[in-house]
Image 1 (cartoon, rainbow, N blue to C red):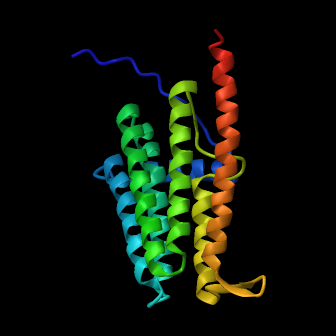
Image 2: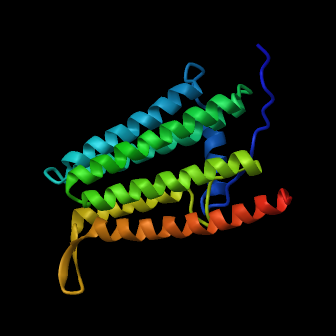
Length: 223
């Protein structure tokens, strides 16, 4: 069976931590034991998100589990970010397999994380569902743009995956101190406010990038 031609998309990452993160990942890749493979790291990233979701589920009863969520976020960063770097460092890249598996794992990871958060009581179920849908829509848009434009956009402005993990970890620490706040004279869940803000931000990203990508593709294929 003839292998179809595949042109790997150009990666575009311009987040705040991108420079430091690249150096750190190369340092880690050079020191990763030979028996650890990129697939092991991908599995670690997925299991870390499952752990985060389970810890979130019981964190209302045991708030100290929010620290476990933060540890899981660090492990997820390690697995999710180092797997591709390690493959490139060892000259064992599988761009089609890696792209497919890595981002399917991301989808399940988001489901585990937000599912656990919804069940925790720290975020309303409807807002968690809305955030999950918004995340999936933005992800679909990114993957379609990667296929049609040949550019895999990993960050938007200064925000990428690492920055989102850092913001979520800070939010978890804030939950320990004050899970609710007073807004317009009524008590609301802190993470409901955060969730609504995140949905709004993702909606803006979706609309802006959809318009920009559609315009670019229209110009490229004028009839």
